[in-house]
Image (cartoon, rainbow, N blue to C red; front, side):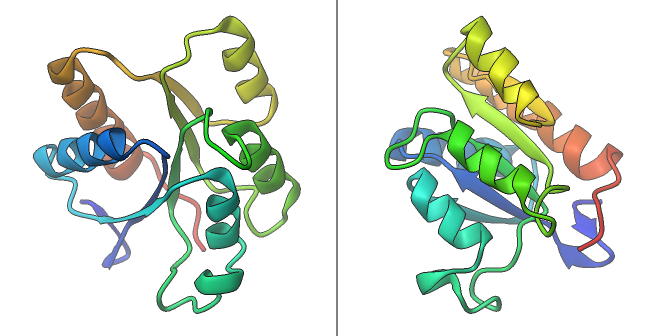
Length: 150
């Protein structure tokens, strides 16, 4: 399916590491998830994009994402801060958020779920396993789950 009522599904990737950005985009492409991926470099930029502020104020150039892939450990505002702001906002609180991070710390997992994350995925170190995880993520979130309407 990979679309929402004929429109492409917009994925916002909030990730500060260029290597992880590239790897995630490659994994999404290999999984044949042909959707529009937007990338932001840090938590502050993620919030600007989501709240359509500053250089993201033109909604035609910064469409609302249908799903957010969120790293926890980002500069300026970390992923927890981003998640807190999303869940406080009536327009964004239903946005599906998948934490995609290197942390396997129990405290990070519990705090993320307390803040309302929909899924928590620890990035596999093995590249083949990472590609498999992204494939499963795409199948689940973009083909099985009914995403909330805008």
